[in-house]
Length: 607
Ligand SMILES: Nc1ncnc2c1ncn2[C@@H]1O[C@H](COP(=O)(O)OP(=O)(O)OP(=O)(O)O)[C@@H](O)[C@H]1O
Ligand SMILES: [Mg+2]
Image (cartoon, rainbow, N blue to C red; front, side, top):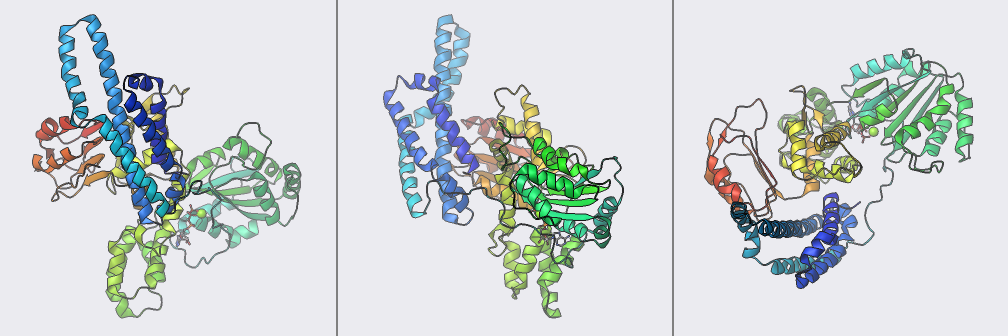
């Protein structure tokens, strides 16, 4: 799966280069046409190894850097095409206007067209394309040295770690209450009157869904209550035959057949009038990938119906517990209850960390390292996976300095905690292309930002990130809302606990992931004392002040004029409830009009 942002941008570029309107317009300038074809050929060379680069960037910083260079050229090319499109429009309007012979209109238009022509005046289109081609030639040469191969890349194979029902439970903290409530539900009669009911556990990667399901599965009361129990790990690919077979094996009925019909009959027979508990762990979707019975790709609903049919023969009180990062699985399976696994409390995180990091250490070491440890645990924001990885990592570190290094480094850069990033990256890989774009865009906001759903959707719209299907008649806002809801259901956002309604936050580690995939084209100023670090490459600029009731000087923003490709200028308040500051009006009057392509500009603090 190629770098989503690049791949999509390139595809869009190729489409635009091939569009009849574009070819028509350039028909008059043959040499440019040839140059652009050459540019396309060079981009295609790079495109072929993107899959491989996407995977290797996570382990090789040079590959990540290489991708930044590719993005830079792709963005330049996008801007150039925008300018050509504007020029084409200008010619069209001028031609129409000369036919009407309007004088006032012509005056107004000339003013505008003088402005849009400006980029061509400063540097000819020809030399710009030549510049891009040159860059691409060296980029293509570098790919060899980096070992990037065509057809490389990640095949989305099932996850390497398959869960089982056994693990050390003595190290589990803070889930007593939810465990008790869920166990009570498991032991109760089915309120709906159906023979079988479903409960889902939903939460982001590493929040402890499997761990909680395991606690329930191994609970003595639960063990006694059910006639049959089965633990089936589904993982990223839903294979109907495999799941049915695993269920049969778990309840002691071994079979070699791969015939779904036979397997289902056998299962129905085994379950008949028995009360069963089935844990379906780690479900990503329910579209069967292993059965040819459908002409078209089956929906999740069809997959679930197929799976559940033989289970209906079971006795009243049978239960299924499903764990997933995706809440829509619960809807598809018509779960009677959905439990969201939130953050582990700070006290419980500390207990877990303490157990792992301080085992066998003397009390002097504890005194010295505890304050640092507590800060490190804070950074994990209640995610057990992160607490555990860091606890294990720090167990091997003795020096105070080493602990401080960990505290000050980004969690991702810890080579010894590699399970965090891959685990969350998987969620990103499973998003559709437009959702990947929208998610990565969120990285321009600072950590702990409170996202207002409606405002975010408007920004996605302004940036052109929403892609309605041809037959889609919904308004753009509705499409944006469906994107957002999907990201929320898949645990990329969480509801803000500080505020009810449409206010959402992103877990720090998810935010890190967004930054990781979106690269370095964003300048963000959060600290009022610093002058923004803006380069020619900067595409998005976000000003975010945490110190209030002051006038923010115009001087601070002058650096932005360097970023001639700026697409986004945002001046946001950290939270609706914080007092405002005031941004100099001159930013609006003297700086922003100099930007030649700025589709997205929002200033919340100009008075
Ligand atoms: N309450 C807890 N106390 C201590 N450790 C926990 C707790 N919950 C989870 N863990 C640990 O955190 C790690 C991640 O937990 P788990 O595998 O259950 O997460 P998950 O939500 O199932 O993740 P995924 O979405 O990747 O399947 C495991 O090592 C687990 O032992
Ligand atoms: Mg799990």
